[in-house]
Image 1 (tube, helix red, strand yellow):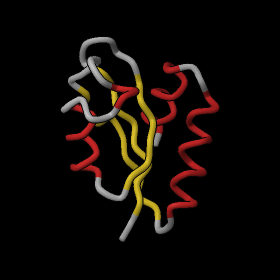
Image 2 (cartoon, rainbow, N blue to C red; image 1 turned 180 degrees about the vertical axis):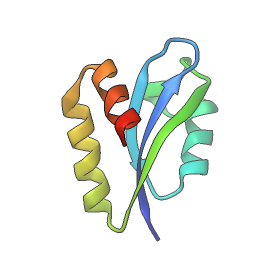
Image 3 (cartoon, rainbow, N blue to C red; image 1 turned 90 degrees about the vertical axis):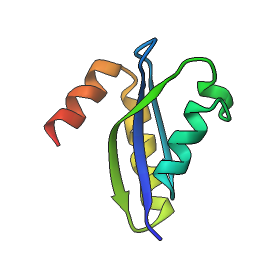
Image 4 (cartoon, helix red, strand yellow; image 1 turned 60 degrees about the horizontal axis):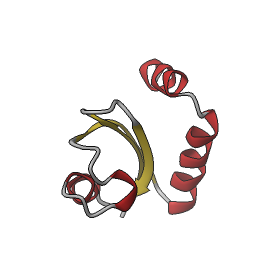
Length: 82
């Protein structure tokens, strides 16, 4: 089963959230239903970007690369260019 690195954006605050999962639909539902502590009370969340990987290690590596960027406008620029 593939893994995904994904970027969500809060429709209310504009905040970005970066994570990885095997099931994008389930994970988005968890974020939007308040089941994820770090995104609770900040939704609704919309999926901006997702990239598929064959292994969890690859997905985590890309997630960490994105999180190192820090500045949201640079992350948005990067995903627009892909």
